[in-house]
Structure formats: C-alpha cells, structure tokens
Length: 178
Image (cartoon, rainbow, N blue to C red; front, top):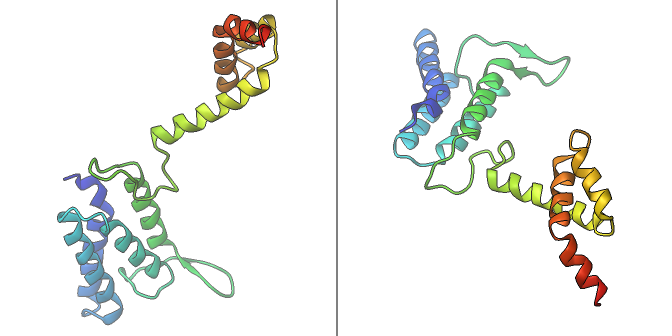
C-alpha cells in the first residue's frame, strides 16, 4: 500500500479531529471528519473512488460548505471567497495522486493532469507523420540539411526527415514506375 498517496488525507483527518475537539465536535467540522474517514477506509480497501470523494470534500471546504480546520485564510474581493488552506490541500492531493498509477487500473485518477507514456508517444508519432507528409517531396540533400540542423528543427521534424531519408531510394523507385 502506497501511503504517500494518502498523506494529505491523513493530515486532514488529524487537523479535523483537532478542530472538532477544540470546537466541541460542531456540525460544520464533523461532516468533513466523517467524509475523510470514509475516504480513508476506501483507501485501505484499495477502492480508487476514495480519491474523488476526498477531492469532493476538499472542494466543499474551499467554499465553506463544510470545514475541517478552525483556522481559515481567504482570498476574494466583495463576493465569493476561496479558503486557501483546503485549496492548497487539493492541489497537493491532485499532485501526489496524478503521477501514481495503480497497476491494476489502466486509467489515471486525474487524467487531465497526467499524460501517460503511451499518449506522449502517440502525440510524437502524430507530429512525425505530419512532417513526413510535409517533407514527402523534398530532395535527399534537403532532408540531410534538416537532420544536420537538429538544434533548430523540432525532434518530430528531424525524425520525419530521418524516416524519409531511410526510405528515400525505395520511395523514388516506386514513384518512378508509377
């Protein structure tokens, strides 16, 4: 079990218990404590939904619908205000859990913040394909110039030029007999 993923949750639970103790277990503090304990139980049971539940409780705390700590620091002018402590906790929570992948779970908890190696490779291959299409009519010398200027050209452009250069003779023979 990777406890690093639950550090923010554990710290929030202890802060919530302390605040509940100081405030005689008031309703506004007890809601977050119950939600955090449920999230912690789901974490122990290795249910990935705990990440979303805990995130939801942090969002509720950002807008003071529920509270987990008696000390608050706000940002906002004449209207809606944002509680900064749970906002920082949310960013830490997302940061810690966006890079960690559970091996039994193909997706990612916060996929909008994390790009898998496969998606990065697909994006690179897509760029290479676009450059190959763009460079398909270039001469052998022009392709060699692109490869030589690799400090100026993008990696996708250089890779495309290399691919086309490797197949240059084959491509020129095919176009000659067509």
